[in-house]
Each structure stands twice: as C-alpha cells, then as structure tokens.
Image (cartoon, rainbow, N blue to C red; front, side, top):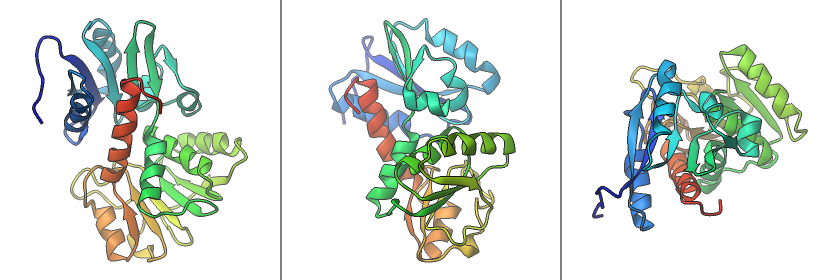
Length: 264
C-alpha cells in the first residue's frame, strides 16, 4: 500500500501506557487509506497522571480527527468526552473518540468485538456458562456484551473487589443472566475469557488454572499476540480458541467505521 502523507494528512492517535504492544497504528492507517482518507494513526505513550493535560493539548490540534484508547485509560477517558453512547455510559468506559465541531463523541466497541471474534471462531454463547478474568475497561465491556449475547451465567474474576462487585450489580440489574464472583478455577464453564493484560509480558501468570481446562471449553483472550501463554495452554488442553488478534481485527473495523462516520 502506498501511503499518502503530507501537510493535509488528518491525524488520529492511539493512547495508552504502555503502547508498544498496540497494532492500531498500522491497521488503522491502512483502513483510512483504503477508504480514500488521507489519514494516519500515531501511538501516544501517556502516563495516567498526564492524561488530562495531554487530552487538553490534543483538543487544540486543528488537524486531529479522533483517537483510540487502550489500557489503562478507557475508564478515565469516558470523563474527558463531551458525549458518550448509551453503551459507553452504562459501562463508564470508551475505546474510541470521534472529534467534530460539536465536541468529542466516545464509544465502546471492545465487548462487541470480543463477542464477534468468539462467534466467528465457532463459539456458542446462547445459554452457556462463562467465566471471565478482568473487570477493567475492556473487561467491563466484554462482560456486558457476553450478557447481552445470551450467556445464562457469567462469573467475574477481578482482584479489585469493589470494581468487581459494582460490575456484578450493574449487570444483574439488566435481568439477562446470573452474574456473580468467580475464581481462577474454570471447571464447569463453557466459555473462559481472559480480559486482563496478563500475557503481555514474559513470565506473566495465567489468568486461570490452565490445567483445569478441558477440550469442551472455548477460550478467548484480549492480548494482541498470536500465541500468548494462555492461548498456548488452551490449545494444548484441546480447547478451541479466539485470540486477541481475532478481537483486534473486529474492533479495528468497528472503530474505523465509527471514526469515518459510517453506520456501526
């Protein structure tokens, strides 16, 4: 692909801490250029304490049209937008922000993307029992999407007890599934999802007891490497899997359409 890059190029950012692991700069730039948009996506490594100041500076850029948000800023950035979608408001988290003359509009696609990736890889969610590790920005969205996709039960494993219990209460208020606190033992579940950053660094522990996985389980991940220790263990146990790269492909398309103001 021949890249158009000149003084008229529109700029998009992906902001996070760390940022080296993200695939968005290449993938989103390719999506923009393929759509005939003279735009590029650039990584921005911003610490949590500096996020508000950085966002205030970006607001003054006249050639910036939007940004994507990754760990650990998805919850904080919900409060920096002028308007957020109903889904983002329920979750209090965003992963993409579109700039316009009317302000910054935030949306959250992580949950929808994870569900799309699971289904595309052959998972059945309707009426199934799921357990998920992580209740941060992405984890909150994925838990919500699993419930709305029709799982009968969802157990949530999260070290921040207050965050976990708050999410459980909100999801149970929907009346769609039984949601409760889980453990690192995945026994008895049909769907087992890692929605934590575990696997981004060498030597990270597994999010669940991998020896308890069985071939009947379907395993998902959010970490955008093809073979994390979690996915490798799941495959060794005979499980079918959906990788973080599968989720990334889905979320990339959803975010590109949103930023280019297409229906999603």
